[in-house]
Length: 425
Ligand code: ADP
Ligand code: MG
Image (cartoon, rainbow, N blue to C red; front, side, top):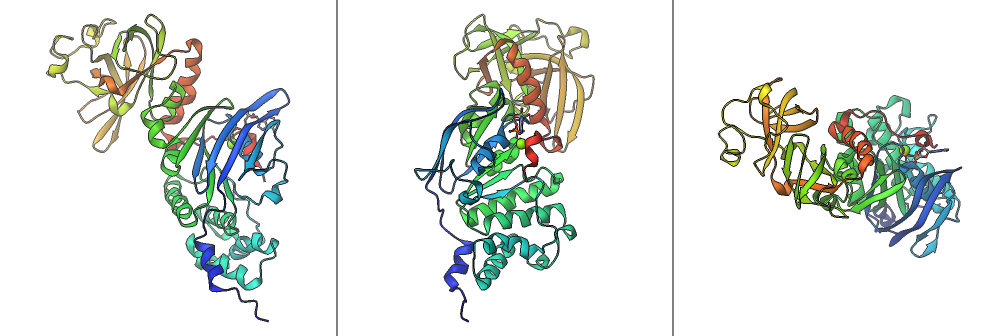
């Protein structure tokens, strides 16, 4: 028998063109009983694109992914693949590759057999199956482990098997649900670049779910930020990073300082002992006299030396004592944010990460290369273009603060992820 596949087939296992031109979600939504987990979502994904769905736990990421996979029926809307209705097809007819948090490998099969499984199911010839599985195993650097069983591999290796298994069939779409969240921080970083490399090699259209904004920013061509089942903003990493549309998106993009102040003039906010000259952002524009949220990244909040001419006249010279920190501090200087006492100081090599508390109890997160110790009074400032002023949503900003900032700070430390929907087999 000469069922040897032509060399071209082997090559195409490594570098296929994207099979999909366009995936379109039109008003896709999903409710569990009366709870709407995903509000009508519109999104167009281009062939070869890497799109990340980003949002805190419970915001509907897994729900959206499972709707795409066909594991959950839609409550409303439709999904089109190159103009053809997809949401009416069962999961196996969609033929998407899926990678989950818990790997979901077949424990009784070897690594090679796990990877070859999908090809076998599709009736691919024996020789071609082996060639393609081996080619993909080389790509994920698992050739020497091909004969082992999953239990003999580390978490990172198991996840590479799961990725190899998903991509070997050259699916039109790869869906990944928090695939790195069970790995330790170092492995997560390594696998992140691995996933990027594999995506580039294969050119497969990928939708990647994560709660980790660093992961999303580093991997995706475009990000979809979700909040409470609703799309907050869609854009490239640079667009979202530079122009977040809301405090919620800003929090995900590293704006850890979200200060609830009042608009005192166009482009100026104050209150709680703080005065900020900033840049109006989002819509509607903040109105004078109304509550605003001022968003500032820790790296943009600077400690000013007393001799700094930028603040001379605005605040008194000389060392600031704890008692001198008054609610009026900085009121005369446009660039002055205010004064605070350093509470937590973390050493991070060239810079210190400082958590400081104002006289009114607001927390400020900043970075500095100056020697600062706990208990030191600090004067802090920000460049106006680095402070975004959003119209405040009244009570809603309280939620933004906790859900957003907590997740943005030490992303790699964030262990708890995903709702119950994460365990989909
Ligand atoms: P995420 O993946 O972003 O953490 P999910 O899509 O898993 O969020 O869940 C979104 C919301 O829907 C959550 O409030 C969750 O509790 C709820 N939910 C998820 N799966 C189910 C289910 N099978 N039945 C009822 N509610 C669910
Ligand atoms: Mg989830």
